[in-house]
Length: 332
Image 1 (tube, rainbow, N blue to C red):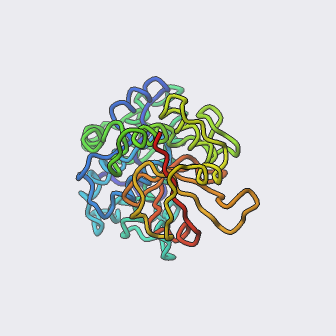
Image 2: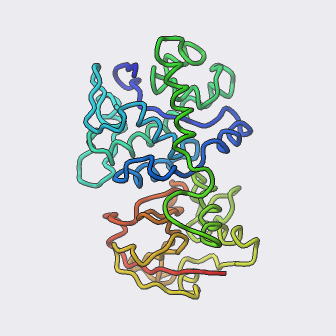
Image 3: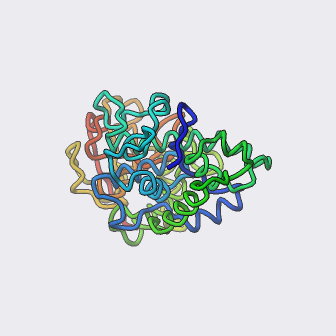
């Protein structure tokens, strides 16, 4: 990969389109899931979570970029000093490196840190390049522009007014676009088996990845809070037959099937189950937060103000493991 030094050095991935109409077209090609068996099992959850950081960059693009950067080698070091699975230059890592596994150190050679940092920087650069694509200063789709900037640096893309015509970048862009389609599982998130209502619930919720958190929100046009996302997805999944209350506690306690859980143990859960979280503050009921379980230790939820609808790790999470969990299952 062609690298430049300092903050312009690239670890950028993609945004999916130049306009809302082209975004929809690209989204139809690159689904929100992963083709089973394509991503190393130890990192699949991290790739899924990273691919929900912003809605322009789905998991399949995260995976395709890692393949292009390091061929899934977490110890990779390029001739110019780019490091790890996602090939950050040291200057860029200093600005954007994330301690995703909570061990106190942001390490570019730690795959979990590297993948989360890749997504954080990707989404930062999506917003950096979007205005130039939309006003015509860059003659490329946002997808192409961001991939080119990852390879050659955003300054080179802006200076060229599109994909720089060097010996590497055009082929790099084409390869990732092509490989993202291979990594993509179009339709249902490929995090675990689900059928019927559970599959429809997950599909509805995953269609809102990247929508902002808004307290009291329950629509894609306004935004979602945690229980607003669940009630919206349940309504969509049943064509309006299941109308849940706008309350995490009521959604958990009102389910016909209750699933007692030991915090940290997801084995009793099935994809499409709900998980309620009790942090001891019962001012609004016993559960302050709710999420949709996806399988493989992952959950989809609207976390908090300033965040977006996203996929995060439930099993092994140092944050959620400190709270009491309760599972619930609807089977309309």
